[in-house]
Length: 128
Length: 161
Image (tube, rainbow over all chains, first blue to last red; front, side):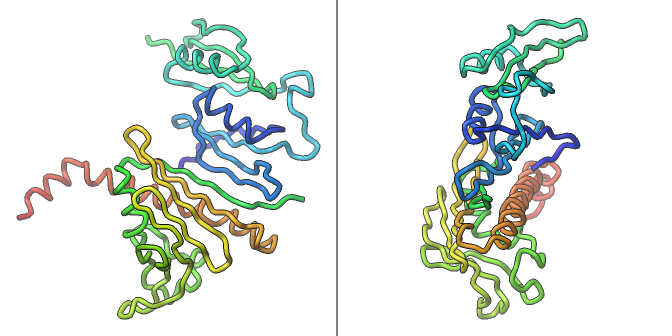
């Protein structure tokens, strides 16, 4: 069970539903979850290749981007095949911000929002 | 204020489901780390083992000759190689599931029933229990698999009459 030096920790109002979404749409797999005595999601860990994210229910006093009305940060994740990833995310109902495009800095990527408005970008390096 | 009720941990190991079950149960003494936090009595513990079958014990063995020691849990369901359920002395329950996913076996352990414990005990079991222990199993299978598949190891094994 790997713990890379940097692991994003993202909070969701509906943690359990979002964990399902992150698996179906973005291809993560769940490796650990705590469930609280009221049924809510505690700490949860997901991985995609060597990447790891932590997820939990929304702590008191926090608001997600959907309620704030704006994004405050984003997660940029390398995947093996960004076009396949895009098809999967789109089919699963992610809020797509555009099809994958080649960028001048040597990556092919696209952006998407998850159901609570957090910003994601998915990217594959362009060979050569 | 909520408190933890259960933890579910999944690891993926590069062996078939039969091997994954066998290593988890028959070979637990090879991978369970006998530290003071994960045993009742680490000083006296000589082995840790599952007695196979429903009613079998998950036991810290203190006397190798008799196989006796302190029971950790009792096996309630024994369905190799898919499933294993055991209930510990505090009435919390562990369900272990083994399923084939592609070339690997996904091993999921759900430890539940923390609501039966006092809040501090629930938090301790949540923070320092199977979420820590199951990765020991994952690492053990990983090392064993690499060793088995290593051509150098095979060559040596092949030379043993």
